Image (cartoon, rainbow, N blue to C red):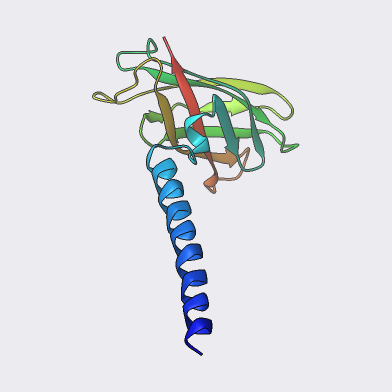
Length: 152
């Protein structure tokens, strides 16, 4: 009877140490950022319809504190007026810009003073585009995200 108990205890201890070692190894890898794919992304910008970001460029040399240049395509089939484009962790652009159907408009969002937009780092933030349909005075929004490597 005692031998079966000893065998079961040895079995549990052996696998317990192996599982503990695996958990510690995974914890160390997570601590050093191996499981952070956003760190390795060189450029990802997504917004909700009716707009599409066809190109984006984050530069430390735009404006005084850097900025982000966006090529916004209007895929909505209608003409819109873009009133503002804001990027969290950067700044906002607030000039009336027409967005003709099936055309691309380039907008440069200058970062606010004190924003640490340094070449080689990543900028991550939420994009909010405020726009109106032509002839209708209801503010609409399109949201998205940006994860972009900053260039000089």
